[in-house]
Image 1 (cartoon, rainbow, N blue to C red):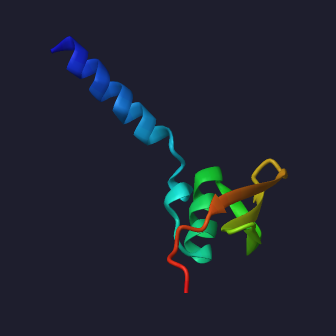
Image 2: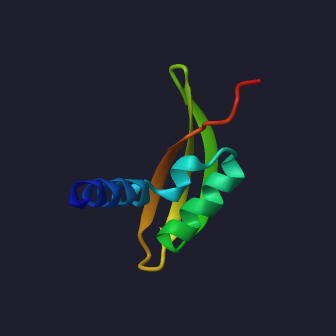
Length: 79
């Protein structure tokens, strides 16, 4: 019983540690979620291709005045 409780808690902690923005599909969703996660304003957002992978790059301005760039894989289906 204790072992299964430990495993359950570890699984929950691992699931919660993944940033919500990691599940974003569109550029707009990724920008919105990154801004919410870092409590920041979106300065710019674009999708770039690196090799065969597309990545959303979101530039944020935090409440402390720090510019932060967040990179999120584009998980949307290819056209």
